[in-house]
Amino acid sequence: MPEISRFYGIVIRMFYEDHLPAHFHAEYEEFEALIDIARQMVFAGSLPPRALGMVIEWTTIHHGELIGIWDDIHNFKPAGKIAPLP
Image (tube, rainbow, N blue to C red; front, side, top):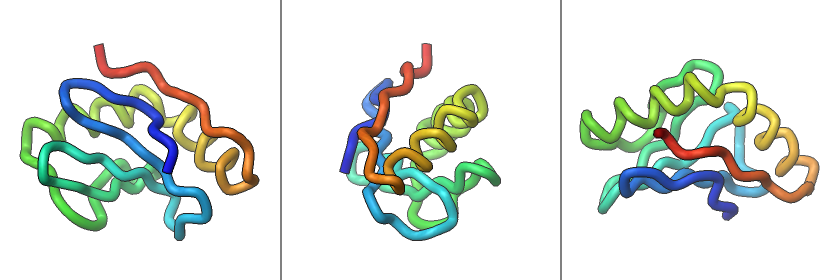
């Protein structure tokens, strides 16, 4: 599972051959949430409110890049990296 980004203790990953909808996994301490890229919301799991806020802000900033990486990994191309939240 490629690591796409890491910031403030939050790790963002995508799985090869993962299911729809297009999403990523956000991990923070013992929490994990699956974030729908298009809707920019959690559809499984949970994160503490502050961590979730940072993840959603990051998702908004990097929406196009996330869709590009989703497409790449589902075509078995190497996953790129995305800049962390400043």
